[in-house]
Image (tube, rainbow, N blue to C red):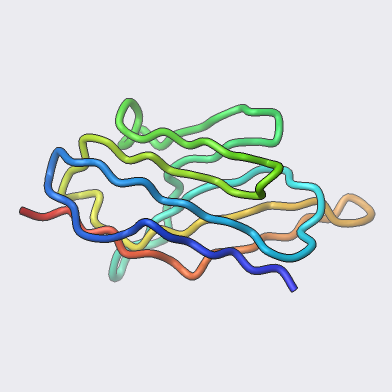
Length: 120
């Protein structure tokens, strides 16, 4: 059974930094891409950043230049380095692995979510 376990969330002051990690356990198979999303109360889940198995990266405009996504495929782990954080970055952050399945199908796995709170 595949599980994604997140760590690294917490309380950080505006302008500070935080690093999130998400590690997969179990036989996850071949990964298409990994990503981070966030969701606040009453809001839809939104993309923060994604990185493909080939290393192509996409960021939401709101985090460009401040956040950095990286991954270690051998360790089945994805990271999100958050710098110069702002109060509006306060949300629950979820990691996502999109993996290949037989016959061209795909599956999504999600972490349990980790709270990030930016406040002085």
